[in-house]
Image 1 (cartoon, rainbow, N blue to C red):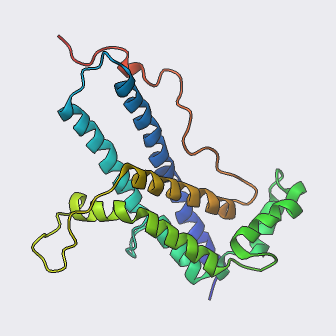
Image 2 (image 1 turned 135 degrees about the vertical axis):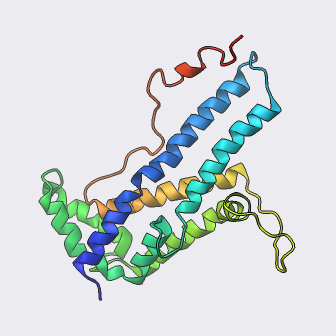
Image 3 (image 1 turned 30 degrees about the vertical axis):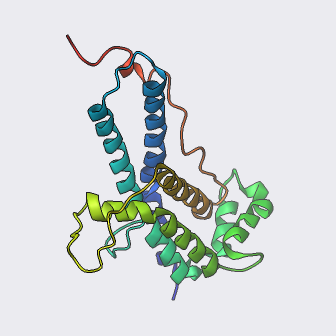
Length: 225
């Protein structure tokens, strides 16, 4: 049976993921800027070893970050587990709570009737609690889009897969497009459920504009002679 404590616990764990989700997008923003520097500056002396190392640092960290969000272990806090828990016990998130939160915030109280329609995104029109089928579809989308990253991390990063075992499926690979899709999906779903967790609020741009001077490190050559 659903209780207020169940929902409070869900909300606490959801909030704990915010920095991790933002970190995925922040890192990608920096990576793309650095790659642009390398690829557009004709004075850069390209090095296979150094570029491979940079690429590995970025890709391994990002794949591991995606993998964290689809962790299904009982002792883990992940976006997949939170969606799964909400799909199993959709009654913990109610329209009554959502409307009460809107009315309690001075910024949203005057617009409660309009903002209250946001709950329909998760429940359907007029329903009192979240629809498990809607949440399950989002959970499965997350699992599907993160699968390539999960397989690479499980087989080659966190562990070394035993190629001699029966049923070995071969070396896991991932494309840049698949990694970007996984990061996008994590971000999109976190933003979506942020609207449920924080009625009347919206999570802004996940991939921020970098502050002036952030790239000062690259103004001079790194190699000292």
